[in-house]
Length: 160
Image 1: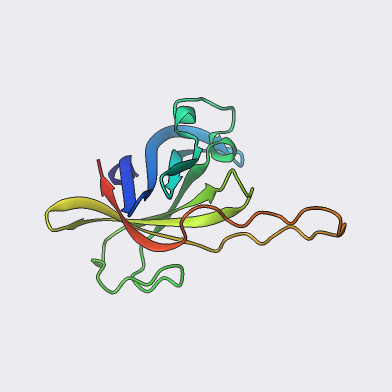
Image 2: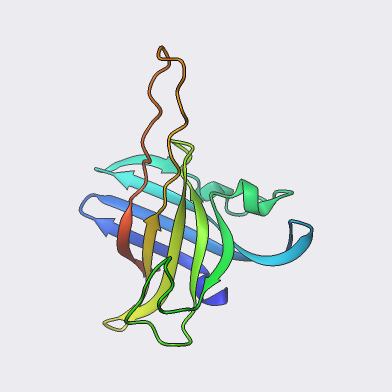
């Protein structure tokens, strides 16, 4: 998990998505202890800060996996993985999949990460996919549920 630790930023015009990732050792999860990547983020859209959870990065929760907005430790090793096929990956390269929670909409998504170097710069190629569906609204008087508010798809984040 160590290669994924750090601060990364994606810029797109006057919008940016910043994440900070930390490694937590021996965290309790499902009756076992596991190492874990946790993280928080800031999203600025059209020059306005939409959400910022970065202040929570050093908060120690009783369950780090469930409380941080980025958390997980699932390693992808197969180049042909159905989660994310990677023709440019090395045969022994490890990619990481974690859960990303959108605090605005309450939805979760898979956050897949691949560390690499482009033009001599350390970067993280990321993919945000499999966004959880909207809750079923049985009361038609309720306002509609908000859409997933963070960036979606595949993009490159620069290591800071």
